Image (cartoon, rainbow, N blue to C red; front, side, top):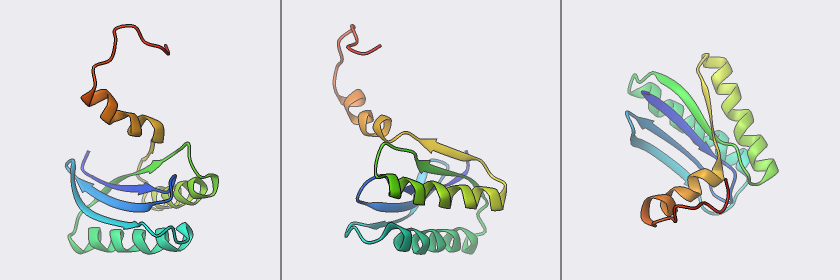
Length: 117
């Protein structure tokens, strides 16, 4: 896929990123734990301005879908849905636990028998 806007609000860190052809080209994050509602709006506005200034077409929005902070997830998903609805582009839900497990799967050998099927 081409250009994707990524939104993460399930943890204490609120972040927005833009990737194109699998490469990160823009990132903003709030490590201070300020209001996600305030930070997210500013970050998304900056990301969309960045995309528009480079005449890039936004192809989709990816958003963390939990588990995580209930209020944070509602803020992130609502913002993502609004952008997708307004631009008529796909919404991609990213399960937070699966993303957090990727380093374990990549760098550790797992037994043939799985504990959870």
